[in-house]
Image (cartoon, rainbow, N blue to C red; front, side):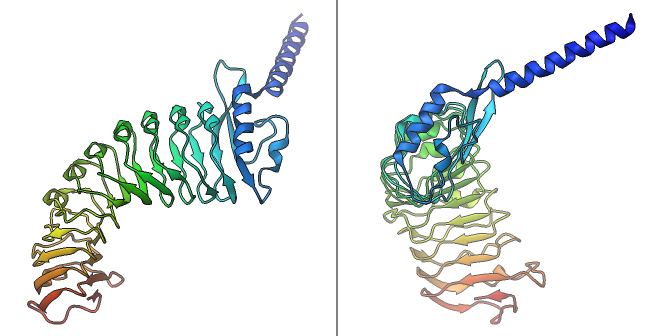
Length: 347
């Protein structure tokens, strides 16, 4: 009797295994998302033939190039979890139907030749963590709907031709950590509301921006603040920028800034500071910089007075370490104190 029961139990297990195999094989891409991908394909020009396999039946089960799928509990369909189109020589435009990929966490079209504007429908991709569109020819203004992405952590749109102001709705991106907008054609102010609490990297460059917001110094986790090649119309660097204790890199090169060089001694882990090619005046602050400083660039300004030697004095530079100081094209007189800096200090 026990042998019979064991055989019956084994048969049930075998039937269940067959059932789950059949169920798994019966899965397919959600019809709405399959239609959306077909619309995306129609908007793209694929000169390298990277997307030739997008002619197959089902995006997920046929494993279309760049389409990463996921299963969802209590759902009999597969869903697009990632769309990875990095460096595939694609041109054409981005389809509004991208907004139908509501489960996608990554949208990556970096380093292609995509043109046209960013569809406002991308603001409906509420699962999105990474929006990566750098290195294309995208133009037009940023749709304010991009502020509706509650899970976004990296917002990378640099090296395009995007114009107009930065929408204030971007301040709603409370989960953002990396914000890359440099090398576009933005105009108007950097909204002070963009002082994201969790932001670690802020890269932005515009054609005409009126002021340098002091509110950016209130970001408690900021490690990189890079705003090169803006026109801040004679704005002074806010003193509060010298108190961003988490900062590793401060770069405000070629921003039409005036006034004094701020005291940067409060940035305890500063590695790199570039304030070159502005209209800064006055003397160089004598307060000791970070023990970790490797680069200080102040060339092409209107600075006067002496060059302080405490940049390298009492600085624990190891044999392989190097400190680069560039003060060219100013009105500086002499190096106060020691005339000749150590060999690993380059002026």
